[in-house]
Structures are given as C-alpha cells and as structure tokens.
Length: 399
Image (tube, rainbow, N blue to C red; front, side, top):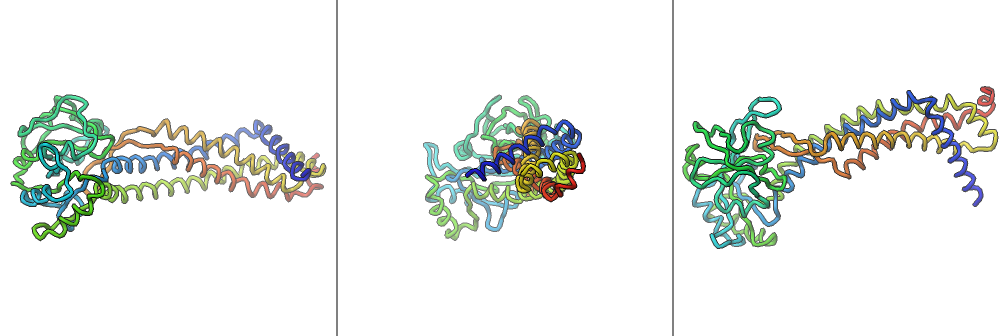
C-alpha cells in the first residue's frame, strides 16, 4: 500500500512544482491556453448553429399531427392537391374533430421577397395560406402583438423569427403580395418552431392573389392520438381517389433538418480539427519549455528516487490542467457570444429562409471540454516522455 501512496505523492509533488513555475513561462502558457480556447469557441459556436436549426425543426412537429403531400413530393413546394382531395383527407378515419369539424387544414405555400435587416438584400420568405383549423392543428400558435388577420381580407400575421430577421414586418407595416400591399396586423410565436419564420394569411385570399383556383399544396391533420397515425396513413394510401404521401410531422421536419445539420456539423469539426493541429503544437511548445526550464529540478527529483512514471503522469496532468483552463474559457466565450443569437439560413427543400437561434447546450460545452482535454494530453505526451527519459547524470550537470 505504501508503494502506490508514495507514487501518488510523487506525482502530486512534481505537478505542484510544475504549476507553480507557470509564471516563468507565462508567454508560452498564455498562447497555449488561448489557442485551445479558440478551438473550443469555434467548435461550440459552429455546432450551436446546427443545434439551433435542429431545435427549430424538432419543435415544429408533433407526433399526433400528420402532413399529407402529393405522392413523390419531398416538400410542399412541389406538391399539389385539389379541393376534393383535401375533403377526402379531412374525412378520413383517425382525424380529430372539434365542434367546428375535422381538425384538418389544407394549406398553400408560396415564396415572397423580403429584404434582410442585416444586409438589405432580398431573401425568400414563406407565405402560408391556412384554413380556420390551422390554429388547433399547429401546436403552440399564439398572437403576442397586434391581432389575428380577418378571414377573407388581405391581411397577414408574421412569426417572431421572420419579424426579427427581415425588414418591414412590424405590426402596422405593409408587404407586397402579388401586385398589392397587404398590412401586417399581428406577430405570433410557435414555441421557436419553423412556423416563426413564416408569414400567415387565409388560404382563400392567397389562392385568389396567385390565381391558384381551388388548389393546395399540403394538408396538416391533427390525429386522435399518435397511435392513430397508421390507421390514417393506411386509409389514405389505399384510397383509389387519392395519390398521396403521408408522414408524421415529426418525421417530415426531421428530414428537412438532417441535410443542413450534417453539413454544418461536418464543417464545424473540420474547422476545429485544423485549428486543433495548431493548438497541439502550441501545447507541445509549452510543455517542452516546461521540461527545458525544469531540467535540473527533474534530475534532482530522479536522483532522490522519484520514478520516471511519476514524471510522465505529473507533466501530463500539468498539460491537461492548462488545456482544461483553455476549454472552460473557450466554452464560456462561445456561450456568451453565441447562445440565443438569432440568424436565418436557407432551407434547401423549400428554397426559403428559416429563422432560428443558436443553441449552446451543455452537451456541446462538454464536447468542447473533451476536445480541449484531448489537445492537452496529445500536446503533453512527447515532452513528458522526453523528461522521463532524460538521463539523471545529464540533468544534474545543469546544476
């Protein structure tokens, strides 16, 4: 028992001396800490974009809501349904009902140009025409400023994300729809979902403006329960009157987010990896500097009976401590700089903008700390081995 305890005491003693000597190497130490902090900041910052985008899509869907498109369509933009088809869908088994009728909303989806606040350049913003049941079908819809649009009038309500990202969407302003100017009468929230990137109006007035007749692009249906989905899907796909594709809302929005999230995540890791290479060299430089300035100390300790293994572990601990300081610093910068930051990006399925907020989650911060620790351990390994292999006689000649 005395052996392991003695070995641990050796490690603690060597590590303590190393950490106390940091002021003599403060230039190299500061460069290493900030280098690792930079890696963590970039990694967490970029991944927070993907996390924010994924959340916006995830909270948009509900397991007890289904979306119906034309068979073969992968988005609302390329789908098309007639009025007779939407009625058959609304009357299908599994659809929930209220006192006013089935909770099914046949919807129209078009794109209009609105200038961005940040750049002033035009961007594609979704304009959705909905039916009365939409506000029970789409979860968490709530008017927070102004009022709801009047049915049959050329009026719109705007999601909070769109209002923040794009110019001229305040209550009382007007937007160009077709050849007319429509007033913005309200701002709504949708629990941070993709609907907050959209502008909503009545489906009928949107059909008239864009000469769409009695056609729609999707049907959103609230089901009796999540378990009613298979009954609803099978009833539609087996109906010879219909040629449709049925998905849960959750699955639909997951597919919309998957490609973009993968792209952002891959880019984030690539940038962080390239920066990490530089940070590893910084850590190597710092630890080699530590070894060179402590040659006499290490030689003396070895002559007094301190083991080579204790030297290696102590120097690795020193490198790890510096790396973790950099990781915590980088994570803190990422959190305060990026968390909650609002932006928008292109949804390639609909070629429209999706507004969302960056999310610096505990999982991302932990991932950043792990990267910092890995950099520290890799950067400290070779200098630690060099120090352990340093001949005692050679080290003592430095005295």
